[in-house]
Image 1: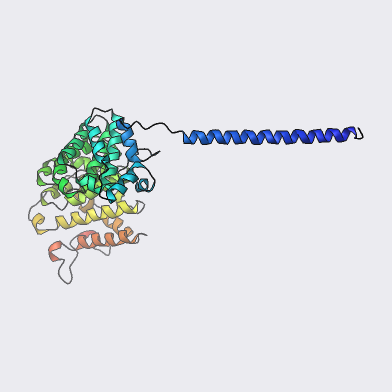
Image 2 (image 1 turned 45 degrees about the horizontal axis):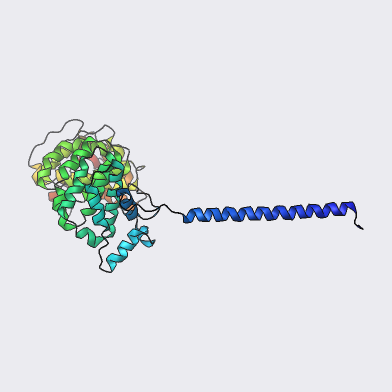
Length: 366
């Protein structure tokens, strides 16, 4: 043959290598085609199913997460919500919000109701015209979900009512749910429910007929304020700050029992958002108790009351405030100074050019 045996063997090895590479490349190509075909193959949309209706409104491939705010990015993809926004922009009603509300009227399991309510919330935020076209009957329907046995349904219903509360014509109807919301917040220990319920209450002007219920739930609100859930604490103290401006509720707040370590809420290690809100609360309480209307009555407080923790002779609030004057966040510094001023100067003399300290906190060189 004119060719040595080693040379033949070498060529044979090269051919085997080439064949192996070709087979490997072919396998990779077939695997690529299989994956590509799998990606293109999507299950058919079951448009008659309420869960599918909710999923359509949430956008393709998006989980219905228990969040209050809408995911605005859904409108940028070519999903149903994005198309609905585009239709509304051109003055056409997509009908998606109405479909969701109609499906909510039917008997559904807890998971389906939770998904539908979450999608309604997003649609209310994103489809303004369709949300405004809803009726008070729709508000009553959503409000009825607060009686559901499942907490996740209650939370989503609270978020939906919060979304609708941004539309003026629904506010009075939503106010009717205030007592029910306070009952839920005070009887169920669930941080997500606390956040959703308190956000709704903080977005509404609370009518006077709710004040008796507010007195009953005051201890629960104080417990939430002293819990370890920052978002719930912030919402609770915002509501308490609002209520502290009501003359008929101020004593109930000041006489509410608190834990012995309540002043830990004023420590500089607390998150700035919570510190700011708790300082606003303290300022409003100080202003309220120094007002002529409140000082006209001689009030009596229990030893473990909020009043004694903040303004009693044994309180160390002054030390906490002085430490917060050098806090890294400017808004906390400013608010701490406002509380110090409110403690030193009663409201009826604060208009004078100068005022003498009205409490022993900052006397004796403190």
